[in-house]
Structures are given as structure tokens and as C-alpha cells.
Image 1 (cartoon, chains in turn purple, red, cyan, orange):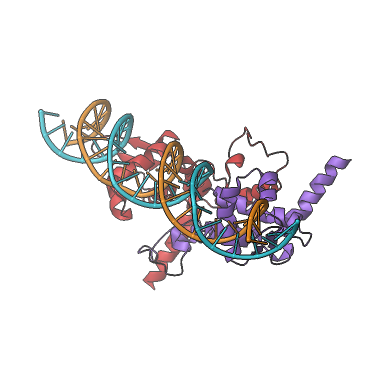
Image 2 (tube, chains in turn orange, green, cyan, purple):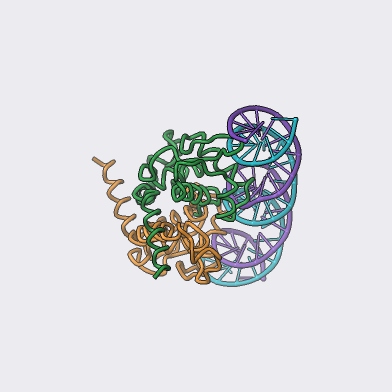
Length: 144
Length: 144
DNA sequence: CTCTTTCCTACTGGTTTTATATGATTATAA
DNA sequence: TTATAATCATATAAAACCAGTAGGAAAGAG
């Protein structure tokens, strides 16, 4: 019942990009240094995000990544799903084709559907912008 | 982000015991037959439930298992936790000792705490009795 | 004693996780 | 054009986790 490092790191990378969103491209090396994640592992994580169109990239010197959209337009759930797949607590809920032979008579299916709903409702109710605001508030707390 | 078979089967076993709660002991063999789970695997699953005091057992001929308490006194969350451990989406939330060095500055910790809360609130809001009622209603639907 | 059922422990094959390592390709600056 | 700095693509591997299977010991009923 755990989110893997890939999903958690993906969220941190996206949030880092949101917090350093000056219009300039941000090189992975900078994010790696700030987040304490190895460059090579981060490459594996940002690649699916790029393929999903969540970030834009430019190669070469002075290249890097930037968000494709505004931070408010990414729910945390949408980011996690790129790396984790469906955030369903059971396999039978994560596919359109419900191939579970017990589906018709399963006494616990209703419960799992409910759990699936509260999880997905929550992760889709929070955006990158929300996390940015939280983080900026937290940083100001230290200034006092 | 999946619940393993052990947790899911544990719930089905507990619910099966609740639905066949005549006061008599229910042998695992019967549950195995009804639920389509092998006896040997079920033994591994019910053993922690017995150690946790969730079910009472008697060995030998005409032995078996029964619930220790009323179905209304078991939340689904409490059952799942026996087999799954804490239902936290990240490791840093599942232990009192928060040994994550990022804890003080983590920008995403608040989000994960929120997810942890909605998950645990939900699983603890549903009891075995609730699932029994659902199941009995469902069975009646077929009678019509 | 015999049969049944719980109880206990170990083992196994497969998959997933969490990376690390090596190198190829591409684009920009000077 | 050359050097540099970045993305992109595989390959490898230790460790953990998952989903069972298997064998037998202990206890109770008749």
C-alpha cells in the first residue's frame, strides 16, 4: 500500500520545476542537487513525464526542462499516475475490462470501490499550485 | 499502491466468518471452499488474525474458528492492518520514529499526511457489519 | 488409536523496486 | 569545428516483496 520512489520523486521534480519557473529552462543537474536524487535516476523518472507532455525539454548546452502548463493545471494525481499507473487499491478496479470472475458476487467490491474513490478524489483535489503556496508560506515562517 | 492478496483475503475470511456466525466453530476448509482460496494459504492469513485476538480457534475434530467480537466491532481498517501493516502511502508516515532526514523541509509531506488521513478515515468508517448488510441486501435482490 | 483440524516453519519461483553503469545522440556556445 | 552539456536508451544487479506450496507437529473428538 505504498507509493514507490518513482511516484514520490516525480512529484518533487514537478514541484521543483514549478518553484523555479522563471521561464528559463531548468537543467536536471540543478534539480538533482537540490533534491538529493542522482541525475541518472532522475532521467528515468522525467522521461515518462516528458513523453506524457507534462514537461517540455530542450537538449544541449543551456538546455533543460520546464513545465508545459501552469502549476494550477496539474493535479498531484495526474503526476503520480504517469509513474505509478492507476492509483487503485486492487487490480480489478484499475482496468476497464473487469476480468475478475468474482466481480458479480464479490462481497467486498463495494468497499474497494469506495476506497478507490476517496483516494482519487483526494489526489485530484490538490494541484502543484497548492503545494507551491504551502511551501512559500512555510519558507516565510522561517523569516520571522 | 495496491493492497496485497493477504489483506484482501483476510477481509473475505472475516466477512465469511461474520456471515456464518451461528455460534458454531467454522472450519477453514469450509471457508476455503466457499472463497476459492487454498487451505494452506488461508492458514497463513488467519494465523496473524488469531494472534491479534480477532478470531478464536479450537483444534481437532469439529474445531474451527469464530469471531471474538460482534461484526460491528471490527473496522475494515483494523482487519487490513493486521496483514498489511500500517496503511500509509509512504514509509515516513508509518512509523513513530520519523527518521527521514527531509522531514523538516519536505515540501510534499503535508500532501502525504492528507492522503494518509483520507485513506485511514475511510477504512475505519466501514465495519464488517456494514459489509454484511450490503451482502444480505444484494442476495435479496436475486430473490425477486 | 484414528481422524480431523489447527498450528508452525521453511522453501521457492517470480516480480517489483531501486537504483547504478555505460554509452549514444543531439544541440548550443565559443 | 570543437568542446561542452544536456537528453535518451539499455543493461545489469542486489534486495525486497508477493503469492503461494509443502511437510509435519500438536491437540481435540469419538
